[in-house]
Length: 75
Image (cartoon, rainbow, N blue to C red; front, side):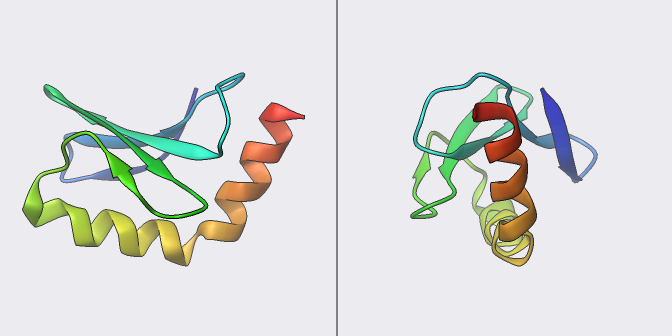
């Protein structure tokens, strides 16, 4: 598991090795655990409303790097 970014010192955005397709990241923190598709940006699970836009913007800004790392772990 690789933590790519932390938000509000509570949430970690992670790519997990040998995870299932489609390409996605996990946002975990406290009792929250969400999956965000790197292809569609669809969120499955709960992300606090005041954090969601920040997380999605960070993923969009770093999309190429995230996809490269996904491919590294899953090919």
